[in-house]
Each structure stands twice: as structure tokens, then as C-alpha cells.
Length: 252
Ligand code: ADE
Image (cartoon, rainbow, N blue to C red; front, side, top):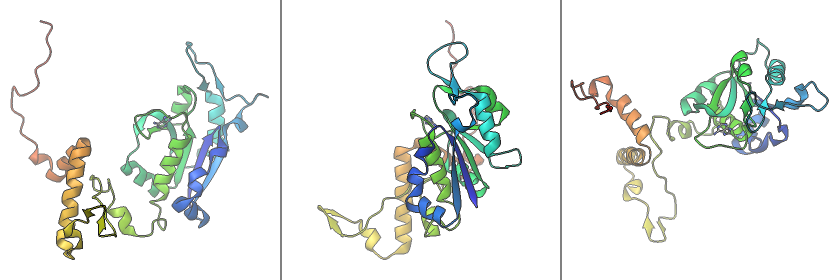
């Protein structure tokens, strides 16, 4: 069974959305499991403190290394081979490729970042992999943990209904998904594109491919460049022309 353990000061937020829909059904079916662990249970003082003021001064509070290390060691002792993640806006951006790799493994231990940050020493000492779910700042790492776990769970064997729904969707081959249509044939004066009701599977596939490429070019030039490079291979890159490099700024 794929196991997710989440270390948080808000265990009541879980399972939250992970208890509904696809993920909730899969959990009930025993495909995966979730444990939300209260970080405060691993504090040692009677106030159950988990944070303190930042060394060097400044605003906010920092999660204590000793309390978090104790929680991690309880949830995932050294023999636990699950990757240990820390949700943080300064982490490496989460990608579908990373999600797919995590889904293939034994599960995840996710530490939810909070306050101004986490003591750097525990990140190093417990080998925490910082992951971001996007270039914006949430009020805490719990929602990011849910996003990460949801993205993994839907890829576990037996969770998604049709294998095709996984294979054709956005990002699986580096392209955004083509547009979808269903009945009615006419909606507020707008028709379903004729090719999709032509019954010609070859033309349908070609149209979808072209639309996926157009959308990716228009909306995600970053993905388009990576897709084009992967498609064309290294030989397609323009040869280096001496003297072609951008001019360096000079002082004069
Ligand atoms: N915590 C706060 N913002 C975050 C983000 N963008 N990704 C992951 N964790 C976060």
C-alpha cells in the first residue's frame, strides 16, 4: 500500500479534500493510506512549543529543528525508505515527472512548512527535499501537501477509471490538452468542430494533436520549447556561429 504521512500543526485539515472523490474512494479501497501527525505531540515543554524567534532577528517564527527531527524520526525512522518532502515556496517546482516517480515508490513523508520557515539544520540533517507547487505564497504548506498527495494518488494502479485518461492528458507528452466537446451539437450558436463528428478517427487525432500544439505554443512557450527540443533532438539545434553570442555589457 502507498503510504502518505503528513507532519503538520493543523492535523484537523486532513484528510480534507483527500477524503472525497477519487482519492477518498481509493483510500477506502485500501490502495493508499494517510496519517496526519500533530507536530505539537513532539514538543517537550508544557506549552507544546514548535517554533521560536529567528536567529539574527526579524519578523515571524521559525519551526524548531529538534521538535521537527523528533517528529520525523517517529513517523519515519531510518529504515523507512519513503522520500521526505518539505512544502515550501522556495522548493524545486513540482512537476508531473516528479509526481509520477513518487507514485511509483512506497509513498511520501510530507512536512508542512509554516511561519517564516524551518530551521535549516533539520532540512539538512533529515535530508528534506523542498518542493513548491507554484510561484505564489500560501499561508501554510498543508494545501501544498494535499495537492502533491492528490497528484500522486490518482496515478496509483486501480485509481483512475480509464488508463487513457492518464495517458492523453496535459503534460504526459509535454503538451497541454486539446479542447473537449460534448452534446448538445449547437450551444448558443456555437457548433462542435465538424471534424469531431466526422467519424474519421485519423482526422480527429490529427486535429487534436494540432490543437494541443497550438495551445501549448500560445500559453506555455516554456513547455513548447522543451517539447520541440525533445522532439527534434540535439541535431536540430542551430550550430554555434562564432561571434553570435550576445554582447556582454561593458563599463564604457
Ligand atoms: N507553502 C507556502 N507556499 C507554498 C508553495 N507555493 N508551495 C509549497 N509550499 C508552500
